[in-house]
Image (cartoon, rainbow, N blue to C red; front, side, top):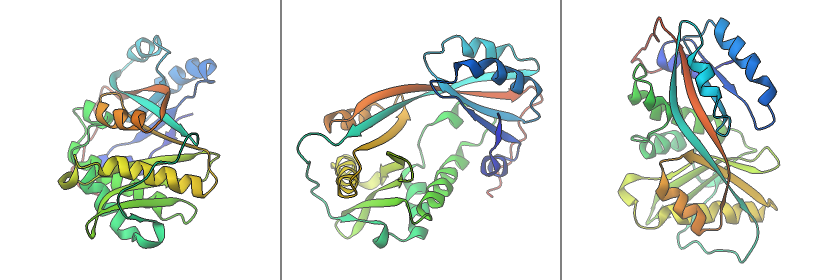
Length: 249
């Protein structure tokens, strides 16, 4: 049930595992608690539907462990309905965005981003952006996936990395560079992804963010996206403590 998170284990210098339960997995909660009770991981990152309000209490009762309520993740989805929207900026596709550039841009864009790792005082927040960069680069390296960028002048202002392998497109990461925020670049970036999905005959695109990022959610709603779900993230770590390393992988 608990899968190894090799990249996070290397990054944070401890044994990290992950568990993600979906809305149809309520019957697996007992198995989850049992697996966490015998886990040899220093840290297990658990994600489950937010409406299971009793699960966190159960996680706090696991012997020799500490449960940290880390965040609530909200999912939004766009369906291809209504009139197409226009993007005022030049758009670049994967064929014009160097894969090597993806990691650099994502690390810059998400340098101060607050996600579930920030809730755990034993994890080095300075390493989080590097993790996002590694994640985005690995997705971008797959030719089946999409990379969409919008320009501000001659430079990339915003970037979206999209996993296109499922029935619906999943925006893995999307954001704009700090220097151009507040100029409409993020809305243009989202419209560019919507246009690209339409060109490929896709009728659904989804994205997620932490519940406190109200500004991006207002942009999604303005563009016709709708909320579809909420998931809680909890860190369950051994009392012995997570062995944190500040060395980059």
